[in-house]
Length: 311
Ligand SMILES: O=C(O)CCC(=O)C(=O)O
Ligand SMILES: [Fe+2]
Figure 1 (cartoon, rainbow, N blue to C red):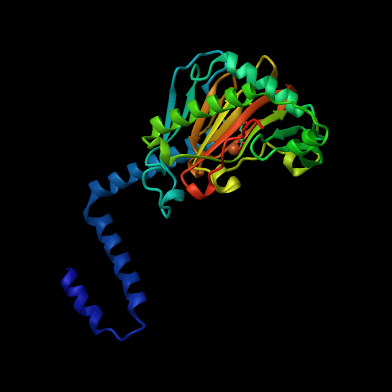
Figure 2 (cartoon, rainbow, N blue to C red; figure 1 turned 90 degrees about the vertical axis):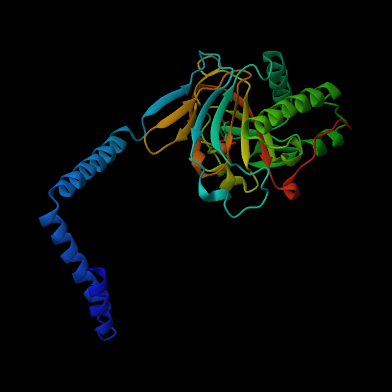
């Protein structure tokens, strides 16, 4: 059949190919429908199956499913996702995600260290604070939300000769960051010297105050790799607990079937690959104040930042 048709097609003048192909296709379909009943029944099943999947996705889309609750303790909870194509054109072979996932780990960081870092966050943020509901403090760059802008906390402290952060503050911060970096390297099979800390890496404070600038609007769905550019792996260390210090403020992954939440909890670490396989947002805080640290890692040595240090 194929051979015969090929000859026919070759005889046609140019310009008629498209029409001819269309006609052939129609003919084949007719033939299929007429001569192959079982195939027709089979494709109907596939069709009905596809419709059912579609209807299911429509019905469940946006529904919240608790991936990890604040009431439980998880040594290591893993949810694997198919990697997006976001890493395809990149080099960094030893570091870029071969496997994509979301991982939650309690117990990696001690509650004592998390509570210690909460105090570091509070004492730094006391020198600034946004007019809206979200404030950040970046110990690497010194960026601190103040009013509707950002100031540099190190310049401010130096000007007034204030010794706010201690050597221990930086030590606990570095120790914590190192533990998370090792956990990510281990989880994704990356040589530790190929994974770099990148910016922004910052403390965050969120409350119910109405947003004043775009920087206060933390609840928009986003992809970290797009929003921040350099990220390959995002980690979050929570410094307060959902249902205790605040309500609302859950972390939400958006998936085609439904959304999956991570409930923040003191000392809980959540980390994930930063591409479009992990679209997410933070639900608006409904009550109280939520504190966290976003610690980000890159595979690109040119995007690496150095540790903040006591000076
Ligand atoms: O604080 C969180 O839970 C997540 C914040 C976030 O999505 C981000 O910093 O990109
Ligand atoms: Fe994010």
